[in-house]
Amino acid sequence: MASDAELPGGERLQKVLAQAGIGSRRVCEDYIEDGRVSVNGVIAHLGQRVDPEADVVEFDGSQIGVKAGLVHYLLNKPGGVVTTAQDTHGRPTVVELVPTEPRVFPVGRLDAETEGLLLLTNDGDLTHRLTHPSFGIEKEYLAEVEGAPSRGALRRLREGVELDDGMTAPAKVAQPAPNLIRLTIHEGRNRQVRRMCDAVGHPVLRLVRTRIGPLVDATLAPGEWRPLTQQEVRSLERAVGTAEDA
Ligand code: URA
Image (cartoon, rainbow, N blue to C red; front, side, top):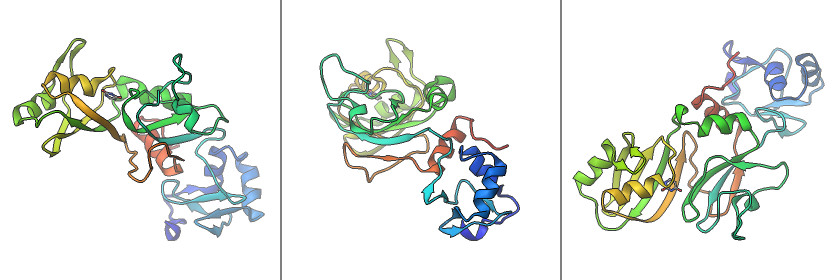
């Protein structure tokens, strides 16, 4: 944090600024000298190093993003809202819940009735990686189900169940209450959680996504969104192997 900002292991401030699209490293050095850059609320000085994961870097009073022009929003999707840019049936869409400019797209999809965390961004590369099965980003869901699944049913969910498009990969499964299942999966098949719960005889009554990789937020009300912090974008990039360490 602030006191570590000059650790030898940190990154040069002008490099971090340049990576955020503020300008060339040379120009960013001038900005630092002109007092336009602060680290954790304190005016920065040339030669300073920062930990981009932990330090808050501001240019002209605004926190810098990881990449210029890219926005990343975390939305708590309410039920009844569709995860498409436009719905042919005129239902409300997730993109109507976030700023219209710049245009963003949902990362993956949640069923219309599913609630919970959804990422929207104009960062195409990150979207591709987050949705590509080979990166196996974990997603955690809380499912309220019919009945109280037995230990055997939970074991089947854990070990993999046969669906019409094949066996599911092993999942992490917990039962915080008799009719609640916390399921962590890293595949992104259509209606996967609902179909898995159906397959073990416990249809889903309510489904909420509570985590996307490293992203959690239990404070967002349904329909509310917030921009990801710089640290969160970095942690996502690290999770899919795009963090810039150079
Ligand atoms: N699994 C489902 O069944 N539905 C979703 O929306 C997400 C995962």
